[in-house]
Structure formats: C-alpha cells, structure tokens
Amino acid sequence: MFRLKTLSVLAGLIAVLAVSAAPASAWWESNGTETKGKATVTESGAFVDKAGTVTAEVKCPPNEIEGKWSIQTKGEIKIHLKEEKQLETKFGPHLHLNVTNWGKNCVASIGTTKFKAGEVKISPCELQLVQEKGVFTATAGVVTACRIEVAICTIIVPAGMEKQQGSNEGINVGLKEVKLENSGSNQIDKANVTGVRAEKQANALCPLATVGAASLTGFVFTVEGAKAV
Image (cartoon, rainbow, N blue to C red; front, side, top):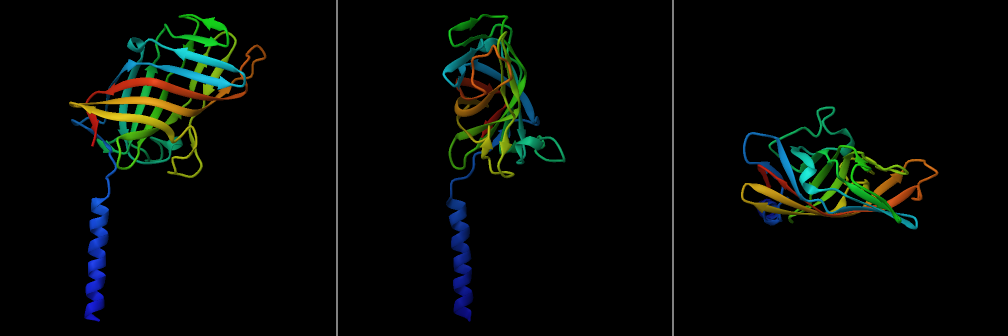
C-alpha cells in the first residue's frame, strides 16, 4: 500500500513538472494600469477579395488610420463586453484592435474599374487577436462587421461566428496569422491573414460573386503601452 501511494505521488509530481515545462501561452499585458490604449498603423497593406472571376482590392494611407487596443478576458467572440464576459483587463488572452477611422483617402479597384480617394468608404470595425500557445503568433477574428462601399459595390466582412464557444474555429475566426514582436514597452503586430469571408450586398451592377475569399496582408500596427508575455 505504501509503495502504491509513493508511486501515485511520484506520478503526480511528474505530471506537474510536465505541465510546468510545457511552452506557456503568451498573453498580452499592459505596462501600466490601463486596459486599453492607442494603436498606430505603420503599414496598411491591402485587403483583397477574390469573388468569382473578379478581384477587388482596397488600400488606405497608414497615417490616416486611427485605432485603439484593449486587452480582454477569454470568451466567445460574439458576446464580448456582454453578460460579464470578455471584459477588459490588464492581462489576458485576447487583444482587440478597434479601427475607428480608416481615413478619407482610401482607394480601390474592382476588376478593371478604379475608385480614387474620396470614392471609397469604410466603416469602423473591430478585430480580435487570439494567441497561439507557446509561440509569438496569433490568429485573427472579426468582432464587428467591416463594410466597404464604392459606387457599384458594397462588401461586408461579417462578424465572426464560432462553431462552438471558445473553439476559435468557424466563420471569420481563427484566421492565420499575425506575428507578434515586442519592441521596448510596445508590441508590433504583423498581419498576413487569409481565409476571410467577404459578402457582397445585393446589387446587380456589382460584378463580384455573392461570397468571396478575402485576405488582409502587409498590415502592421504598434500596440503602444502593452506587450506579449
């Protein structure tokens, strides 16, 4: 009996050590008392929507994009800041990027048709990053729908919907990938995200297919006052 108890204790210790030795999930942590702050976009990259045989592309000047970050607790993407779930915190697994203004000089093309500055409108929208365990990369999700409008087309990137709560799998969630890099007291995030679902609002003049596979590549922003740990 004594030997069995001893073996049981040893097994428990080995399990604890194994868990301790496993790579930790790198969460986000505020450098101060704030749960949110300013996010600065340094490279805007391009949003590309391949819908059927036609491709749409949108680009915005990075210096005109305004955004804020917030760290939030774990929860389902569609109920953030509701029902006491996914609340703001100084240390947590989710980083939200709320783009409040894309600027007035975004340009776009749909097929061979060009749209110049002033002809493209993009709604404010919020994105979520979820860290992958043990590595400094994250997947992306859409918290609030993004809406892109030109004269002949309206493209909507719908809010994310998980297959199961907390699975990080489904429509516009778990999108790869965003590389994380700490720089002093800040963090630099580099997004090259594919597999985004984009939908065309009904319009006979728009040559895009109803649903397209989109990407956001070359999008780089700095989280000021927080880092991955």
